[in-house]
Length: 353
Image 1 (cartoon, rainbow, N blue to C red):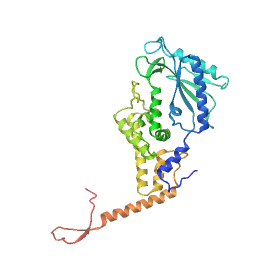
Image 2 (cartoon, rainbow, N blue to C red):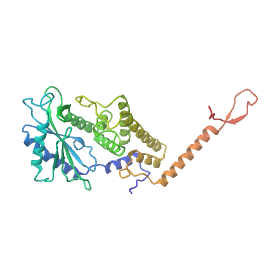
Image 3 (tube, one colour):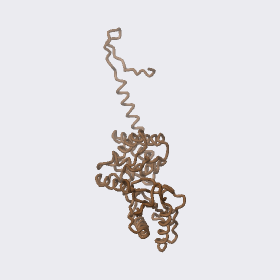
Image 4 (cartoon, rainbow, N blue to C red):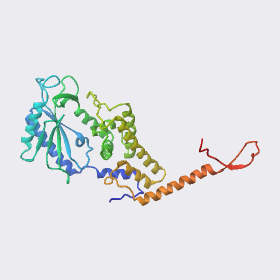
């Protein structure tokens, strides 16, 4: 198992861990290629349409192993046939699926394209992973129309439509990545991995939507992570996260009850704060051990040697006892005027009080 020197800082430990979960250039290149051929097939099928990119690759926070890609196509609707109270997205989705099958058949013959029962997207199964050892690589394709009466798009919700603004979402993330010198993407990647290794209480978009409001300047990883957890706990205590683009009618859905999500975030912040406190007080092995517990993934961030942890914990306890003895055991001069005046005695703690 990989080991990390206990003498390096928490920031260095987490930076090393971040690099282990970064998607490789080869994975990105292949994923973008597949996304590109799907986009070409859709634009050929719907003349005058435009495609947009969304999700982790577009936002710069993809994790390895890379298993999917997101793409949308905005279909022209000059006659206003489609939309709420009008025609649903079913025939557009079927046309798009047929176009993807035909356009990719020569290069990806074993392709599977699923439409039936899908809430929003067409699911494309390549049956050919871009990352070694993975079972498959998929694409989520959204068929959308412009909203003629307001900002954003209408995207499918089974046979009806919902308002959304995925193009604005990608724009907001791109701007934030620029003004933070890519710190936003790095911190989000770590948060997504924490989420994946700790029961996945939040969807990735909720993580990013919260981060847009608290990771808005260049920052180191540890303070950036701490700022996000502190902000997320406070915001979710008030209610679920609204759409950052101000278009979607409903807030971002949680993967568990709000109470349970807040509980998990609070416990994670306690581990993070403990790691920070250990480092500040000189217990670097304990700090390393606590941050390993925080991420809960020994492949991404292995814990230090257990013997070293026990030795440093013993040192910490000994130091604490010595401090308590010095604080509470030193003689104190009494200033009363009773019979015991002038006598020295040790301070006494009233444990029963």
